[in-house]
Image (cartoon, rainbow, N blue to C red; front, side, top):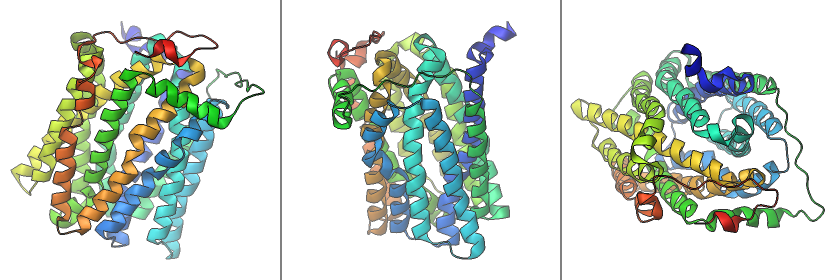
Length: 425
């Protein structure tokens, strides 16, 4: 019985990806808190500068995601993952070095955020396209759920550890942990035995044509369009909110880095619960209803954050984080597994890149809007309300779509010359 519960973890190659993801996520949780705290505490960043930093962190998703998808479909995805890990280790390692030398500036943080974001674009597109190759499309929900468990377990302990590490070691030194974690991740990805055949590029292959094919596949499918609209608008509103979150905690509520880390860690418990609940919720509600109902829950939960004050209202905001974490992970596991199962293998990179472009490409704009609004008379708390109210409405695209009543979502058919037309519904 104990062995059967391991599922995909019995498979050597999936275990290596699982370990790589675990190590990388631990370091990432440190940097997600430490890098903005470097700006706020070490460099005394303004609201506008924080908005620009948030924009730089995600700008590559708006600029490079579409060509990245076509390039990834031409390469062995395992090699892309290793290169992305090594590159991020190098660029993040420059932050503590510059701080020790006394030359760290906001300009360098912007560059670090841009380069790391660019490498993350390639890594994420390759990662989501590589999983079906490792586990098979019939095991995608299990594979995505197990990896979400990793992400959310590290979110529980990571931010608290990061917050106290920042208090003890200072924020720039804490970034070292993430650089080391990416090296560990690259090592485990390198231990994966299963090798992909190098994709064959036809004599008439054309980057623009390949990008257009990915766009047509996504826009030609009503279900994918509605998911993209829901996720993209939600990410826009979340970026507005979280561009001001650290400033809100530090300058409005007067919280210490350790306390901020504990808040994020408690909120991450919801994500872990969501990873365990995703499969049973889908069986109970059906795939389509799970997507729109979870979108409603994470939108409404976000309204509690702008209410936060020191005292019981802060605990209420943390409860909102927990509920949002549950809903977001259930939503992501369900819709990502659907997308992966629908798409022919040769188009996976471009489908994922197109979706990333549409849903993450809104985040740089959200960060910029957050920075501008935070610097205006509206202020930091007012900016949080803008993001929260907007986020409450983002479920509408999936609600007013066939997903509302579809318990079983369609799956694609693997064929060498698969056309996007037959899968459009």
